[in-house]
Image 1: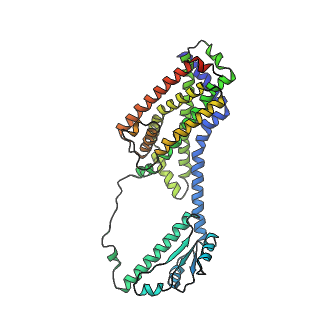
Image 2: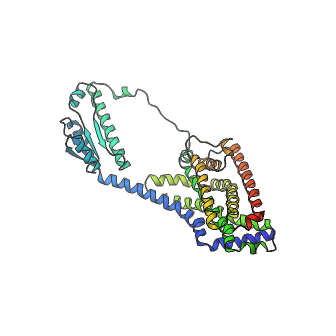
Length: 400
């Protein structure tokens, strides 16, 4: 055990000396969430302010049937109305050229059909890809106009608007805000944890195995007064700690992001306030706990591949596909309807994604969670045994 700790301290110093490894292991996961959430918050707020400042530029096709709608929008603040040609090509050019946000087209006979209570309709042209806030304003304007027309016709017929909604329905959502929010964003957070956990193990593993082969320092270590198992365990613990630190840095990054952005204004700050509640100490500890066996699994796998590889570059080319393979179950865990049960709890990486998602939502069940822990520990032990076997094989050690 003493030799294992000596090797561990030695390898840890090697990791901490490497700026690239430190950046990938600590700096990137620590900063990515604050930068990501702050960027999204700033962009959303900027788009909302831009939409409010510009107002809505409404075009009315000059068909002679637009007067009623013109009077309706005349009293709405922030709307600029312009009379335009009835030519469809000209309307398209105005919208696509960003001269107008929307053009309403009322066909011939529209007003007469309304007055005689006959079926009729109108069209409005817009581009939904430009600005979501503008699109919402346009659709809301059209809905408000239809409600206005409905009220007018019911008034003319001396009919109460209540006839359209004879009974009120009150929807009571029993899911807490935490459950609702966790079901939406809970799958995204573990995705980043899994990726950073793998990346945190990947670079140290490549450097401490394939890198040492390349530098010729592994042979020196093998003649030291320590068993092969001591050397392997020292390296394994250093790689595993690196992955764990990377995952913890990602969690700290989320906490920093939530603290900064929750002091702001707008919808994004409200969402981040809810995230503050989700990441309470018990949830954070549960998340870290579920990542521990996965981290050991990644450490064993990446170290095994690095031991087998002849050089750092070869190890990198062999481990990169592993990252791609790990991404798919992590993404699958984000899909709606995919839940942690006794079956999915046996699928590595997917069980972590789903388990973390339910921990964040506060809906985790003891049975599937326990099976997730057991299966992850089993996978980690198997990976560790295979990795040790690779390290004990002289062909792999002397390959280079």
